[in-house]
Length: 428
Image 1 (cartoon, rainbow, N blue to C red):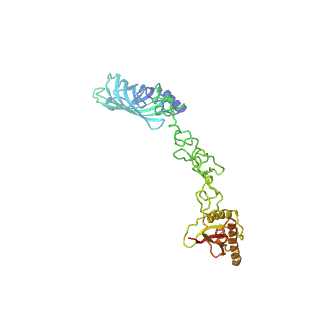
Image 2: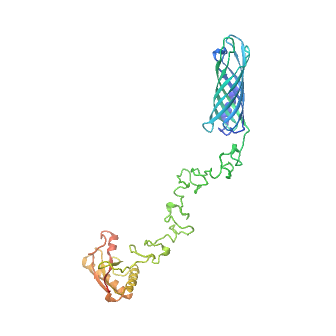
Image 3: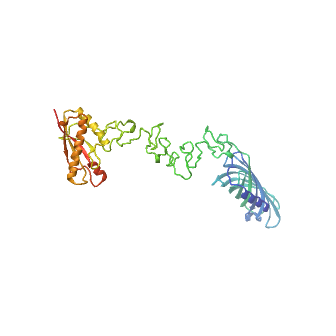
């Protein structure tokens, strides 16, 4: 027994746990130490002994096993008895973890007694055991058994129930099939349920079973196969800094234009020409014929400022012309607007307009009145230079009296510095 326990301890310390040895066709051979508790009806003393077992795995759970053991006991009344039980049983192996599992067995035992008793009754046996896998080839078994001995063993005796306990080691050999037919034997197959026809790697895993970056998305569905460890990912296996919906090589969380058309080059702002709108007028640069439209002006489908001369009540504000502070000079932005206005007025020769100049509230009112009129006159001169008859244009300076925004803000004052054209008449 001491020698047997030493071998068991060596197996546990020197080998890595594994349940892989239980395969269809595998053979289990083992040595064990056993202790028998005899019912008092037998008249026998409790005793220990040694034994051996041999099993065959029908599949990875069911096993046919035969076991024999030998022990010597004594009758209470005197005399030595030799006990040799031989058992055949069907066992079910249920692994609760990768290395620990339960064993349940039912069978029949031929209980052979000799010397002071000479009888060989047959009776049923039940077994409950614990198996600890220590490698592909070794396991440790601890079992509890219960045997029923029918009839009497000595005069005056009765049928009896006799429990037993046994501890042993097993060696597993053979039985290394390829159940999923992927070309990798079950012993080396880390993915034993590979679907038929799928190519596998050296450890028997297909793309639908592998998860190379450990993000819980299989490689065949993983659009971002190199996700850093511990990063949260979406259903495509991508972390926020890896998502690239339009596939322009710019992650979505940094992409100012997330719907770049396929194949279009992007610039430093990670936008294609068909996506940019540099002047913010709602018309993209690649079709914008007026790319520097000032903010806030209505434009047509080509991105150019719209000049509408359709009637609306008695007067119509055609456009607001921006100016710099304390200046009546026509800026390039104002010129672009006035050119469009001149084109509209040339098409509607019957229209006359009033040009109204406006200022913000900065400075003294008399100065602002003069400045606003000067702005109106500057606009009139520009339109006349573009072919508009002078008698169709009247001017007026409103100063700061008609603001369109709050003069307390920089943006508000900029909006208030303007010239407006209002339609005053239209010939029938």
